[in-house]
Length: 317
Ligand code: XMP
Image 1 (tube, rainbow, N blue to C red):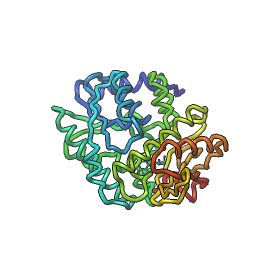
Image 2: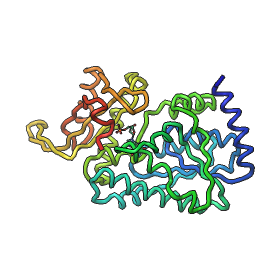
Image 3: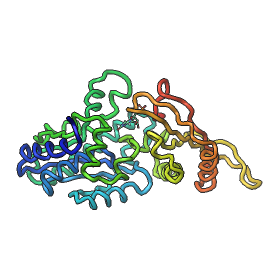
Image 4: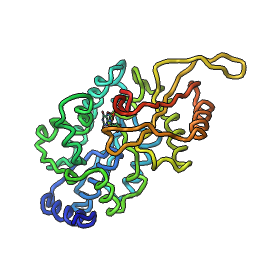
């Protein structure tokens, strides 16, 4: 019978055997999969696991600092890399969603490549690939075929002559969470909503600027924190805010305003392949809208996305 602790013990033994005294590099994303993969390998080989966590400037508010601190707290040998400007430069003037993904993917590989090369004699690349990722990458059509493209670091293993180790590749998401729990990983990391690799870039419709990122981070943080405060976060599969490329008229005191519109999205789902919009309480929606408009300068209107997948997707890009 499969149990998380049997899986953990067997994997650690297997990884010890497989990796010996070799050095391994792994890119952490802050998400569940890469965190659990890292902890599993950490238990097998300790400091020979070199983790790299890249700040692409497209993460949630304070996420880089907070997640990096919890990784260090977990005992991981992790290097945080501030590559914000490299990503903003690569994204400059780009509005097309797939072009954004390509620019981000390419920049990620450049940054990761450079960091990995700096580790002497590294032999392995570890990845948090799970079973559905393997299925997804063989699917042929639509944006889902390219979904995880930025996470698999392309030709890197060949270029650097690295072998690939993927300790979670037989598991589904719920299995990964159970393994994470058996490894005593913080519920704050295990219970996190999925977050796309290209991050806020695909939630800012139109081109990306650091100013737009800052606005969206504020809006997103108000939304997510209020979901947590009201005990709704765990009922939602994924939530976030989208910065729309339009302005609308409003009034503030007796002044006319002409400012940005944000959309809020919260969905229920099992695997992200299909999703229903969440029927969040009206009181909640009302409070979060007021809070956003009162606190975030430059935003004067909030709308709620009531589309399900299919035919809409979870992300707007
Ligand atoms: P969609 O928008 O296709 O999203 O309904 C399904 C799930 O995939 C995530 N997603 C991505 N994840 N890179 C990622 O790592 C991407 O380019 C990407 N696009 C969508 C999305 O957040 C949702 O969880």
